Image (tube, rainbow, N blue to C red):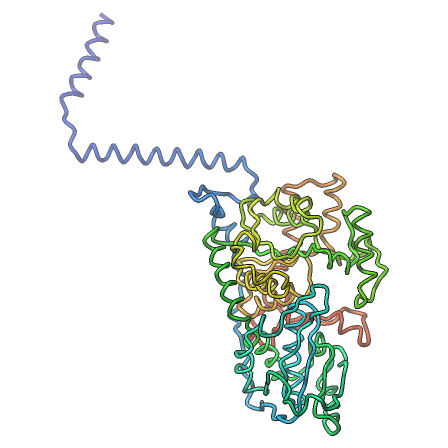
Length: 511
């Protein structure tokens, strides 16, 4: 009875089931239910997998192009790549209504620029302002051919000379060369004092009563960072950011290389890896180098006449934060900030001291390193061979246009690029706190700390306010007196706010 009843019951159910025909709408309803359940199950599973991962590590999605940076979740992408909020600040370089152009057509200022590319660029911009203050005609400056780089380039090789002259014709008169009748006359040869103000140059105008030509032996840091008239500061900005364009061959190739970088991976970091022989020798930084390498750097420093400081304590330099980060330290730093290993990183640098051995300590963490030589063809680069300043100009363009700029050392190029990026809208620039990082790196070296969540938290907290957000220019360090205080000020070209960047100051939080 039980078996028959059970069987009969099953037969009854089966009969009823087959007796009812399913309509198309019912079939569609059941299909939607099953699809929704599948989606829910997938999301629930993905959530469980995610919770097992490090929450501080960027979450990557799959990409069909292996060269592109994997897409980050919106929160991480914003944190890693977006520029800081600029408070609606904007460029302001136009002269005031009181401004008047210089009229000294019969007085000439000749200039010998000194240093590398960016030292010369800032110096030339200052000389434009000095020529205006001294009511003089500026002769196209001579570039440095005697520095460490021994670059034989002339002004028109690096800069667009015609544009430079035309762009500033409302400010000063600029000529290609001295008139022939003035080439042999006596000149006043001057070493202008460093970080001088308007009063200093006003006093020097007395020289015009005895000389028609004043020759300036050095151009770098000849003008104060602060306490200058607004029109003089804005003239410096017009010279630096508008008039001093690179020559067409440099400008065109630089833009092509940026386009290739974008095609290669979309967003990219430009890393100014200043781990080069001249910088290590100049700063006396020998951390992690062999005794033979340290001695080589010491000998170079001793034999370079225009480097005044010869005896340097390498350990003290590093503890004080005065040494460039090593390739390994840069790799640790960027990973701790959260950038994924696949991130394209353009290396703006000359020859890395230690070669591939030291560079491998960065490439092991970020294998997608890109150099000029891998972006451009040999034919495109042939005219840049043995012309370090022209090559540095390509790096400058690529760094200014990058999504993120990271300098391993605060040298002339790092300061110039940061200031230019601020001028263009406060593009993201991450300045490593080298002094603060020393203790962290030492803990890693001794095994007290390991790479991971704790390290990331420490590095990110240390650099929360070091990413290029708007702020006023820093003054001199506390306790520094006399003329020495000028050396500790933030460079005008590192941060041209507020003279050349305007907006509502009430909205700006100074950091």
